[in-house]
Length: 178
Image (cartoon, rainbow, N blue to C red):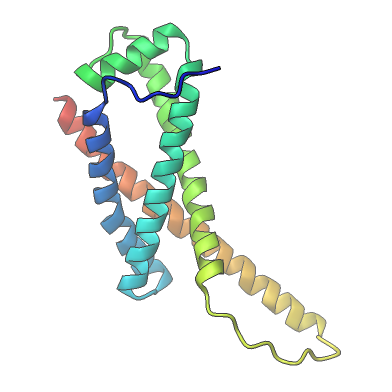
């Protein structure tokens, strides 16, 4: 049974950098949501905050669940990077690139589903009209096409917002490493 006590050494630097990343990602993603989805600014900021905080919490949860299962060599590299900002082994860079790609796409998928759930749960319910006994094939196709177009627009918008925020974070990490 794993020991769930708090660690004696806390990676304050990693937590502060995650906080900085969230603070950078929120305005960038809110701006993209505002320009592409044409919501008002307050709504876009709410969606950007929600997407980033939920995905950050889920990401940290996954990290803390997966970290005890890592091999000793990877744990050592992780600790070395978190506390000293360097790696012991040069072979770690390829693993980091692979991990960064996985994290990017996992975050993109999480943010898309979070945005989709927020839009569905916070949208105003439309007063249901009395259903017409016959809905034409044309009307059904039109509503299906509209829903598919909105879904595609959400995917592209989320991808653009996530890409821009990750690009800004990558630039900051490059400045940090020099």
